[in-house]
Image 1 (cartoon, each protein chain N blue to C red):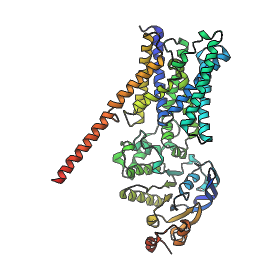
Image 2 (cartoon, rainbow over the protein chains, first blue to last red):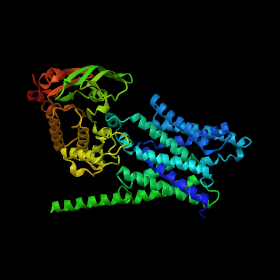
Image 3 (cartoon, helix red, strand yellow):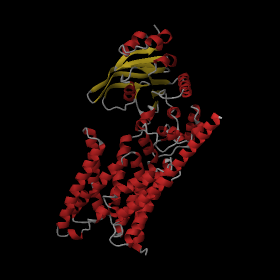
Image 4 (cartoon, one colour):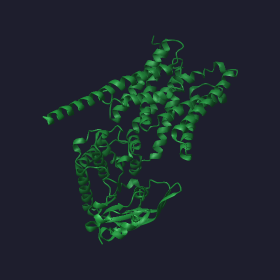
Length: 297
Length: 249
């Protein structure tokens, strides 16, 4: 079952899950999750352009193309919000659909070209972790390790920047540069995951583990570890399930695994879960009823 | 030595001018109230002084030097509603943020930083809540945590934006005791305040503001009915109750 390549795929998926879980938590707390979604969709035209220009499908080249259009999309969203009356939701919707539309058009062109059919670029839409070559997995893993390292290094700075940017500037933190760094790292997380998870569902890896982890704690450190764990677990399960059944894409399975963890967290998490909160509310009411009854006597 | 020197400061949001031609010179060691009606530009003045606004002209000197966050000379208490209190962190951690400038990038807070943060929490009577997540604190407790964070900055000049809004009486007394203590230690404190009833009791120096400076100086010279009427543009119909003992005529 666990052949040599699948073991590599599994390691890559776990590292990717950890990276997305950590980076996604910062993006989630910064309320930038949807920007990540747009950035992920905007990776598609970059992949197609990189292939059309170089006629190669080496992962680093495609990742570079994806990173350029992805970063461009983020920049465009910020520019539109800053220079027009449009709000973020409209700007994100606009940029996401336009970039993805261009990506699909370019992908069609690639598929109709001579070598296009063998390019395998279609796998970038929904992800295909099981077929990744070992060299690609080395790229994926090193990129994921870099993201994990950066999230650990800038933990304290990003925490303050997201919580209170004005105060952060006041104590001398380079807030604008930290913000750019976090955005750049989000783009890097996305392009790291595009082949394994696919552009359409990559944002789910950023959002769902972080959102699920938030139910478990009120401490950023604990949330980060929980989110990384959920990301790794979804990545591993998604990879294994999609590789034992031929024809299944990895992205959707990863999302379903993450979503299951989210539902479990929503109901059963002891800190902020639905059941724990209901019980607390009930206990509070009961205490007050007893108190009032005593007062009336 | 002057705590604050402002020369020809003007601020505009889009086309709207919020502050026009503000000039101030305030010596060190005073507890200064920044007073004015809603929309007078009180918060804007603080943010402009702290170099947080892009559309600003004019020169600001703090302790006779241009503001440099790396000097750690300035402490800041923002308005309580300026942040998301559902953010996952606890009271001690927020106070520790006041040390970040001293700690430096990437490095972790030392045992000494944690000790300082804990002492600051104790100063505001919140040591029992160190591990409490900030979302579970009351408004007054949140305000105390913000004050403790500013104390942890160990600054020389403090700027506080409406620290008394929405707090309980005990918290108000704690805050004013700490402000007076800071003054006694020779620090300079600037406080945006909107309650005229208490202003004269709290502050020994005043800035009356309405888009530009109406008056600035020692409280007994500036906190007069004429100046207040000018700053509030004649809208101060409740003055009759307060002028008897609170204003200096």
